[in-house]
Length: 609
Ligand code: F6R
Image (cartoon, rainbow, N blue to C red; front, side, top):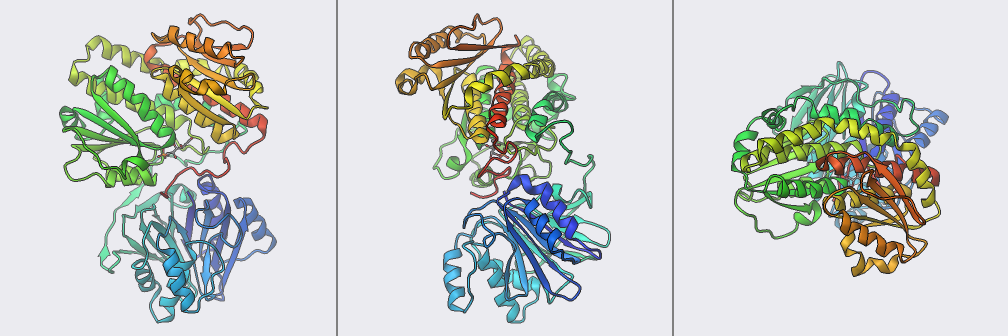
């Protein structure tokens, strides 16, 4: 959600900043901007509404250069997407600043600055920070001291990077509530909201902690508290290969990532050949903590929340352990009563989602016996702050709609079910069955991917539609929810999911011959009940699209199209069926001509409340 890149180097940095923005663009793409201090110590700024390519065009048309600079790609919060509201925001022709997060007391600061003679040229909450910095600099403070003075006035969340023409070789940054990393170079240093932006120039990073302030120059990195007390933070060397792969032979990241799932699942499962090894995936101390767990509380948002909902079925049914699942943005603001022995489990692809992070931080002393995060990004805030970590090995997910991160999260949660289940009487036979099903999962996902052509054909029926219903029963209900979320976010078709048994309690009123109804129908014990629910739809003229186990006894007939799914072990069906629904959304969106990888109004990592 918004991206920051900054550089203090001895070489020209405009291309480094633009490349950083390209790598971050999936996090926010309403508008973009860049500010550089040139060799005459003059501040130059390009800002453009729209995607990073608009900024590149501006730079190509009127190039400017410098060794010190900041850049930003925006996902609008305060103020609509526009050139005026794009970052960097400047003040007095001397200072420029980029910001991720939300400043809650901006209105009060704005009034104060206007009274002090500042003119506002945007509707953002960020502009006030630039003027506060300027005000402090004008009173003689150094850039670092001005940043200290400024953040002392801010309420809310921020990651910041600022430059000042009076300190032309320095960038100052600060973090509270939004991530910021230092990229450590040789004779040059960088800042970014995500290390991925800087993998082109360095593999060494310092992860700033909450409340840290940093000053970088080509030769130095100084980190301190808001009070100016120096702090040391470790440097981490990233080992894996460059993460931003290109799209290869695919037209979009989303479809590439859907097809990467067998490999992502294999990587996530690697080394978990038996239950003891499964436990090792949760890190040091997991075994002792799992011994004490009697309840699980899951918090997550969006697609990750759906992973939590699936996990509840597994944890309660297979492991016999009680489990609550809640959307993090609700959990954090609710007065709660926890049972003793509850493990807090956060699920987050990015590890940076503000609401999930806040839910973790808002847990009171003694409320939980410990915390566990399932995340796809190492060194992310949740990974650093939780007691136990399960890292899914999905690889970088660039498409805004989560696909491979979700299915690997489900694997992680099934592995947690195994680890907790064996402590609560899960038989050896059951454990082996689950492990075997997991081992075969990539195979069933590959079989599902072979249905791509058939799903594309089926998707054509959705093109003229404005609404769709998704139905599931039991553990497939959250999968229906995930299918509906995927369809609405990338094709903009309004889609809702219901447990099929709820249909007659209201949503059936919506069913007519213009309402496609997607049903997730594996061959489980609820099948017969689901079949009756589907009859309720058919008899009202609804058009059914049934994703059914090929042994479930469904056949194509008038207004019923069946997609025969691989016959696979019950326990992994939620994962296998998800893949088919991802393909459905992708093909609908593709034919509707929407921006599949960057759907409107959304961002990959939601680091604001
Ligand atoms: C939807 C999607 C979002 C995220 C949600 C949480 O396709 O990707 O709903 O799942 O914003 O993000 P993470 O998992 O990073 O916490």
